[in-house]
Length: 268
Picture 1 (spheres, rainbow, N blue to C red):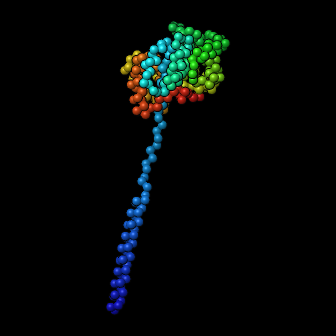
Picture 2: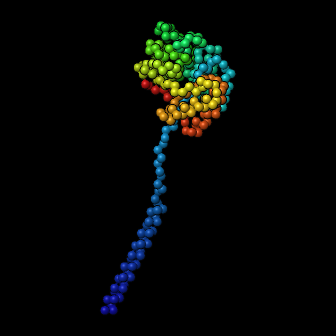
């Protein structure tokens, strides 16, 4: 009887020892697991930067205004008028400073005032249009594309724009529609002729006032937020350039990427 009791006690003690050892072993294993487990990394999806292209029109009248560009190290597109005293020199200087150069091609407006020399008219024949365009392109070195200066009438005319786009196609140049007429056919013709195309969203400096320009830049940001990119056009004026010096660093801090128009031009 006593032996049976002793055996039972021994068995109970052994069971308790095994149980305690098992618990200790499990705890040690869990500790090792915690040490070797890699921390969970939360993957945050990357949001593509919204792109903004800023174009400054009407370079060529004045060489001194280029000095205002000191300390601007952004991807700006400079639109240079042909046949002016400083056209070729200013295009070369702006290119050297790292800006993108395009030809600001004078085209016929509805209201015929202050027309530039050799403005392309919709009444011209094919040979005249081609000859004028070739001469204007030759006047602007480092040219990557073409935009229209004025042109409210010419950009509504499929024949005129078709002849122009034929030449751009041959040279691999893009076209930026300054969009001075809601009846512009440029997007349609560019699509038909497979010409790289972009269109202006906002005019930045219809008033030569810093507060107004900043308001327009805010509208440009809204456009970029909505569709991922936007194109704003200003002019080679000191007030515009000085305002951009304030605005550009803020745009970059807010996550907007300043790009050349060539990065946004695409086939329609």
